[in-house]
Image 1 (cartoon, rainbow, N blue to C red):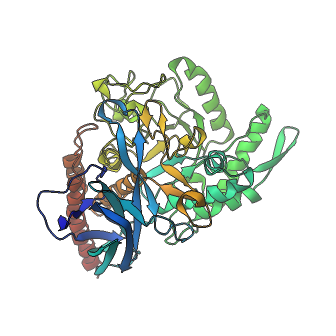
Image 2 (cartoon, rainbow, N blue to C red):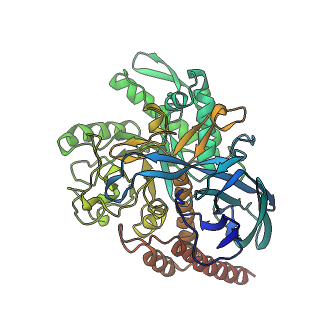
Image 3 (tube, rainbow, N blue to C red):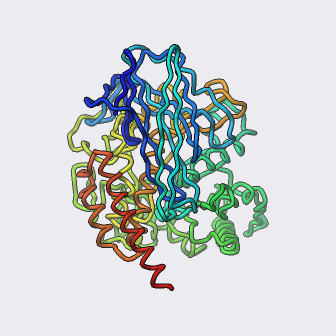
Length: 534
C-alpha cells in the first residue's frame, strides 16, 4: 500500500520483510493502513515505510491495544553471508520509542530521512491474554517538517489465547560477562544486565541460558560440597517459576552450571544437590548438562565417559551433546544435532542421521547454513544456499521458518550457541562478522543511554530476534490445532509452507495465511468442545 505526498512516499510492509534503504514502493498506490490479527498473548506487527525527504521525522502511537514503535536501524555489511548474502546496508536493530524492560522513553526519533531513502518503522501490537474476541483500533501519527500523516491500525483479536509458555523449548546462550563488555560496564553490572536480557527474551518466548555464568556459591568438605542457593535462586527462580513477567511465562530450559577444580567425589556431591534442589523447586524437567559442544568422532570415547558420569551422579538431569545420533554415545539422552544433519546426507553434513533414530530431538542452526569460514572470507559454495538462517543479510523468513520446520520434524527444542557473541569482538553496531556470516551468535545490540537515550542500559532487539519469536507463535498455532483434534490439518498446513528444510516459502504472506486458516479451525474445535461440555 502506498501514499504519495509530494516527493515523500509512505507504504506498509510485512513484519517479515527486510526493508533496505533503497527499497521502492509497490506499484499500486493506496492509503496506507495496517490490519492485524492476533490471539490473546500474541504480538503481531507490520512496518510503515517512509521514503524521504522527511526531515525531523517522528512517530507517536495512539489507541488500543498499546502499540510499540521502533525505528529500524541499519548496519553496513562489508562481506556477504555465504552464497545467499549481500553486502551494503541491511535493517536489523529495533530502536524503541519506549523500551519494554523499564518503560523509559528512548531516542528513536526524530530522524532525518534523506531524499530517496526508505526508513522503516516497526509497529507492534501485543494483545493481552483473555482479550478476544474483539476488535481494537489505533493509529500511528507521523510528523515531519512541513507535513504529517495518520496511519490507521486495526487489530482483530481471535477468540482464543496462545499458551504463555511456548510448546517449543528454547535454550539460547547468553553471558553476563559478554553483556558488561558490550555495554562498557563493570562486573557489578552483570546481574542487572543479565536480568534485563532475560526479561527481554522471555517476553518473546525465548529462554536464555548461561545467565551471569556464575555457579551457586559452595564450600568443600572433603568429598562433599555444600551449596548455598541464595544468590543463584534470586537470579533464576522468577524465570523458572513464571513470576518474572505478567502472564506467567516460564523458562523452558536451564543449564546445570558446574565449576572446575572439583574431585570426582565432589562432582558427584555437587550434581546430586542440583538434582534434588531442582526436584524440590519443581524445575527438574527443564534441567540439562551441556556435556560437550560439537565433538569430533575421535572424541566420542571421552564424551561418553563424561555423559556416563553425569548419569551416575544425577540420572534425572538430561545429558546434552551437539552432535548427530551415534551408538558410540549411549549415555547421551538430549541429542541436539545441526539441522543440516537431520535427514539425508548432504554436502554440508558428513554424518546425517534419519529423524527416526531420535526419541526426543532438539536441533540447532549454525554457520553451516551459510558456510563456516575461519579465514575471514565468505564461502560461495551453492551447497550452502537456501538453508534456514539467522544472518542479517538472509531473508527474514529464513529465521521465521524454524518453528514450522520444528513442528513438521517433531523437534521439541532449539539450541543456539550465543546471543551476544559480537559484544566481545568489537562494536556490534558496526560489525557482527563472525564464522563467515553477519550476526552469527548475536541477536541483540547493547542499548546504552549514550546511544539510545534513557537512564538505564537495555538490550536492543534485532529484527531477526522478532522473527524467531514469530516462529514460536507459528509453532504454537500448529501445536494447538493438533492438540485440539486436527493434527492432519496442522501437518498439511506446515507442509505447504515448508515442504523441506530448504524448500520453505520465502513469501511472508504464506505464513500469515497459514495462521489464519489454523486460527479458524482452532476456533471451530474450541467451540465444539464447549458445546460438548454442556
